[in-house]
Image 1 (cartoon, rainbow, N blue to C red):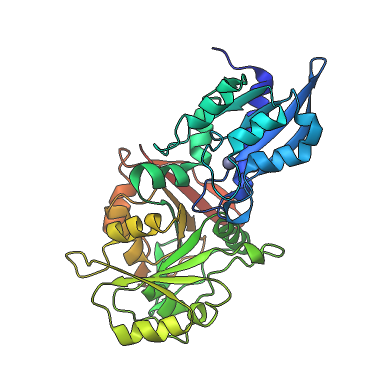
Image 2: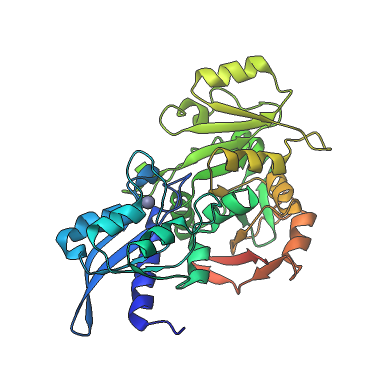
Length: 372
Ligand SMILES: [Zn+2]
């Protein structure tokens, strides 16, 4: 069946709405919905919405609320199959029926096997015309985190690395301040569209970062902070710990880490997650990511350091990599940004697809996508 240009346009609009919620709806997916009426051969949008902070209200509810009576006889484009289960509020599929929507255009079936297809069944049983799989590939990209969490029991992971022109990330045990102002702003924007920012304990000790989104007007969109810390070496006076009551902070540690240190960190409001160690004696990142998915996380932004980056890439857990390269060279020996395992993975076209570098301010940014 060929795709109607109006359905496609409305679905594209719904997908951009869904993107707005990314990072703020976990463990729920971020969904977008658009309702329109035809006036002659012209579509007129009467309602639109996306999943609100914390996962509720749902996109369909938001769009129906805006449309009011104009929903009767209208069409709706929605980026994921409307929900069918009864929770605190009635399911969206029933709300759509009740509002008198005549046609539903959907991008993706809900991958959760308990509900998959049930939302469509409710709509069709009520006589609503349902068109499925509209811009499915695009919707899968937007929903990558949610889909990976359901299908592979792990979150979607973006890895950001910055290096000097000669390939160093740090010197004398300290990270280098490498990226230009514009690159830094892009990083803060990316932080806000993920459920969590993750670093290794080495970065916390060397840099004492805040790990928040500091873009003006977006500070309230700072995600959860995650520290991978095998021996609980994070100091209770580190900035991420001192501010844990304002911005949630979780530490992933080994099952045999000190109980006293755990107690000191928990006193500051930190949530500690214990997982097995791998053969090298570090937190097993594969087990750790499964635990985070179990806790509801769908999208994680990783910012260092080289040890954590290498461990994640070696276990095929990284979906997207951004490498920021400054035009300035360190000019002496330092901490290598791309460890050998990471470098060879990036050079392997069966593992990652590289885009051509883009200029961002003074820097070059290169993007790599995991090959599926
Ligand atoms: Zn719903």
